[in-house]
Length: 137
Image (cartoon, rainbow, N blue to C red):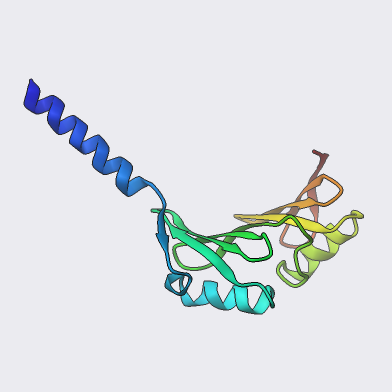
């Protein structure tokens, strides 16, 4: 019985160690993630990065946080300030901008984007720029 309990405790400890985020150097992010940050967030540096079993996370010097998939493609972007233009496909960005606020958060999902504006409007927009859902946060 003691061996079973000991094995269980060791297994849980090992799982918790490997399930947690592991700090990495910014240059250990996938090349396309580094390139994305350099091209879309000029003037901002990656100040912290970490990896977990689902992907990567980068914190930028301007307060932006970006989650990347394991392949280096961005999944979500959140900032305290306005996100730069050109991150979203043109029809999606145009639909979001037409709602009267600046984009501060983006989540990419299969077939659509969830966008939060500075005026607390949250949108779900498909790839063609059609607003599927609009609500005030």
